[in-house]
Amino acid sequence: MGKRTAIDLFCGAGGLTQGLKQAGFNVVGAVEFHPTYAESFKLNHPKTNLKLSDITKIDPIEWAKEIGLKQGELDLLAGCPPCQGYSTIGTRNRGKKNDPRNELVYEVLRFAIALKPKTIMMENVPALANDARLQSLREQLEELGYKIDVKVLKMTHYGVPQNRRRMIMLGSRYDDIEVVKQEMDARKMRTVRDAISVLPPASADLIDDPLHIADEKRRSDKVKKLISLVPKNGGSRTDLPEEYQLECHKRTTGFRDVYGRMAWDQPSPTITGGCNNPSKGRFLHPEENRVITLREAALLQTFPKDYKFSFKSGKGGVAMMIGNALPPTFIEFHARSLRGHLDALKV
Image (cartoon, rainbow, N blue to C red):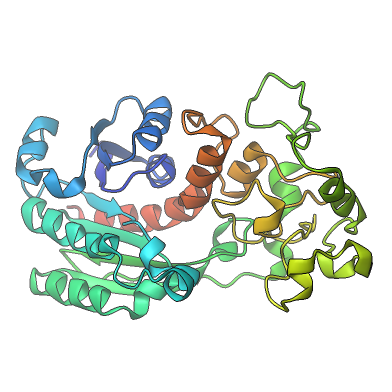
């Protein structure tokens, strides 16, 4: 049959596409709105027909003709609509319940109506699983003839060394489909050590990999001292003597991971867009007195060791791309499941 075809509707820097390719799919088309994300995508996936555009402005039928796809031929329509509007913190603290990006989930429906793909994959934050929009999307896809399954899963059970939960929806136009739910012994889960110990020590003088640079010179002496006092291998700011507790931390019992260290033999916390900032979470290296490097963050997200990211939006922009990305290993698992489903049906 040759490689199965796929389209990535919200491709970002390419985590989903990378996972699809690892599962044997040919990603023939992708859409991205942000220029720097699109540039990162192109650095790694130059053969994919990439549309740098507002997805709502794209005509799926015309684009399919451009790619050379007829209606019903596409094997997989995949995407992760922007999730910030569904984030628990975003909704509670930033008033994003009515974020217009929330409506982008319906672009999956619009493209499905136009292209009639054989299967569908949509991934997002767990909160979307209980949102009325997902229920509406599911009902409308089922009216089109798709069998749908939705589950919220722990990524540690799928080879990702990171305590991250995500929702995944799979759909098939041909037969019942199931999101495979795995359970894994904690002793078999991949850890921070598994992911990043393969790298040499980070150095500001290291030029071979611009993502693997320790960038601590810009921090104040007080913050450097605070970091040095956090106990190695999983220590927390709550372990610090009171004189080194920041005033803002003394006033709250929450956000205990701030200025915390990762533990070598456990999965990391969720990698977010603040992964290069110790004040944003448990992002300190298990041993060295520094924040994890951008390369270490990318490896914890299961990107390949040589994956490229554009620096046009600065280091903070790279951190955001990495934090917003889908772990390729997680996508690969579910894409292989879909490919097996299609192969078994011989369609």
